Length: 441
Ligand SMILES: NC(=O)c1ccc[n+]([C@@H]2O[C@H](COP(=O)([O-])OP(=O)(O)OC[C@H]3O[C@@H](n4cnc5c(N)ncnc54)[C@H](O)[C@@H]3O)[C@@H](O)[C@H]2O)c1
Image 1 (cartoon, protein in one colour):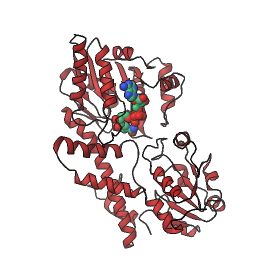
Image 2 (cartoon, rainbow, N blue to C red):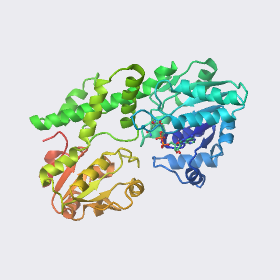
Image 3 (cartoon, rainbow, N blue to C red):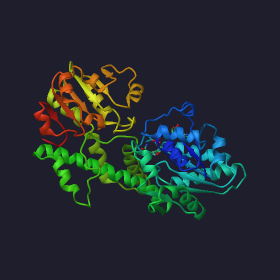
């Protein structure tokens, strides 16, 4: 099949590459000329495990191409994936202007049947908007080229994106046209050879499904974080509680960890956007999600508050090591990361910070080009040197089994604030550390 993917970010690049991997002919379009130039030279704009080899393999095989040429992109694919960003607008609603611009370009240049697929996370009703924009452009050209609009939300996780795309748990297709459904079924057939994972539904339900999934996951996190805070106050251990409730199959163990709050490019903006959709389109207040957001906003300060509880509100002269800048492990994405809140909290109290992340250093450098008080370090050991305590924000594997003798030797004092509960508190006591984690004694 010939496929155009519009937007070569986390979702677009993974989608395009995985579709090429199974034999399709894929053209990836981006309006960012630097990104496209880099991709043509084999430089990826993002870190995603395994993606660079897969891109190189498919480029070499002649199945994966990159362009900034809008007209060529609109002509190329029978299937046109829209995978552009939908960032939060000022009022919290999803900004769909990039989606509209992508649709407009398709309408401006298409000259045969297209299946236009919304892969970006978009509010209910966006497919109607996309259809309207393309119809408008076709009318301007006085042509009536046929097209269908499909909603196909993406559920991949950064850090495991290739695995998620190649072996999806489910593929949701919102569709009201038989031809388009046949195209989508054929496209996804190679990704579900084991058993059918495709759910075809009406377009609005598909659009809402993506928000419902992320809102549910965010709810689990905020719920566990609140319980962790309660556990601390009443002398319980959230890890024991997690095991106790996770064993119930109706609850399950996944996504039940307490921590320093959720971040990333999806949960915060999608929770906000769903709240806004409900308020604007249905006059409805989503009370649970308001609470989820509020709890998360507070939780992002949890490490900073624990540091202040120990060292006081005036942190001038204090110096902290920080391990983990990415919003989660196996990505370089720092959008809405809890590390940003901790850095702001510590700097505001006069502390200095030495930070390290296995892959997000370039991202950190561009976010903090000249931040007074913040030093970006090349190794996790370098960050420790002379610090009054170590703070841990991201659950990278390489942080899980450090050489504790080295850690103790490099720190000024053996104190660790762990926002991801990586270590066993009693073992840490034996190792001679003052160990402060989330929701545990
Ligand atoms: N990142 C994730 O883990 C994830 C997972 C599932 C769904 N999503 C959703 O997928 C969408 C994309 O997310 P992302 O993280 O890949 O975004 P991103 O910001 O990494 O990439 C978006 C890309 O689109 C390009 N772009 C914007 N407008 C364009 C246009 N008109 N024409 C061509 N290119 C254009 C930008 O230059 C950028 O490269 C969002 O709606 C997001 O919510 C993201």
